[in-house]
Amino acid sequence: MSDPHSPRPKYRRILLKVSGEGFSEPGETALAPERVRALADQLRALHGEGVEVACVIGGGNILRGAAASENGIRRATADYMGMLATVINGLALSDSLESHGVQTRVMSAVDVHKVCEPFIRRRAMRHMEKGRVVVLVGGLGTPYFTTDTAAAQRALELECDALFKATQVDGVYDRDPKAHPDAVRFPELTFQEALQRRLQVMDQTAFALCSENDVPVVVLAQDLPDGLLRAAHGEPVGTVIHNG
Image (cartoon, rainbow, N blue to C red; front, side):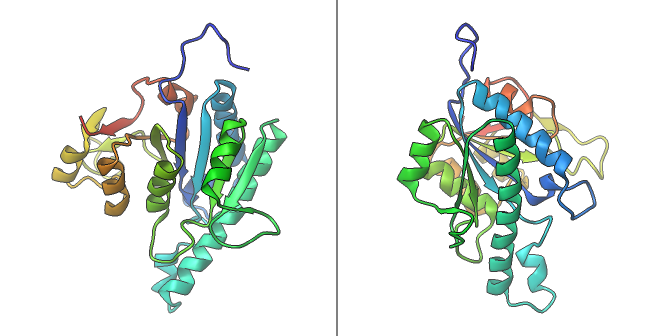
């Protein structure tokens, strides 16, 4: 349970977007249980503070639809395959959270009723209000949309205070920090500044949804110790993008 005397988190309900690569070791495609457990640990800490959490899960570590379509699979088919890959990652995260004593519900935009509930907005909100972590899989259930767009859409539907994007770097830089050691990290940006600088934060549809509906985006490193909890309290970790 959260300490009643500790400061209240700045964000009381968040949508966390975790890419498929967050479920595997760098450069590998297999599901890495240690990384799943580490993510579950962070979510348990958030849950303990009373933060309501929904997670949109990617599946790129298993199969990325756009890449599969370049190898002869029709794009729509490849995207549906990618949606099913997100179910695998989502079930792994749910199981790890449940083993930590955190109740979850896996909700899918594609029909896999043997293992997931269908995504129904009001039901998802009710789960969050009851203190369950909602794991959202299957993207939006239709091809040609990224999980970034799914995350922005669900953040709006579930009336979240912010969208957290967990990545493999600690924020948004002026250029690729892996290729340029002198790259500069931005602690804060407006949506307009990010567009003017052509920074690759997320796809344009997702970015526009967040900007138009005034949902701040917090980009932070998935592996930062207590990073999600610190960001929920408004600490300066990663990069915060807002309307200014």
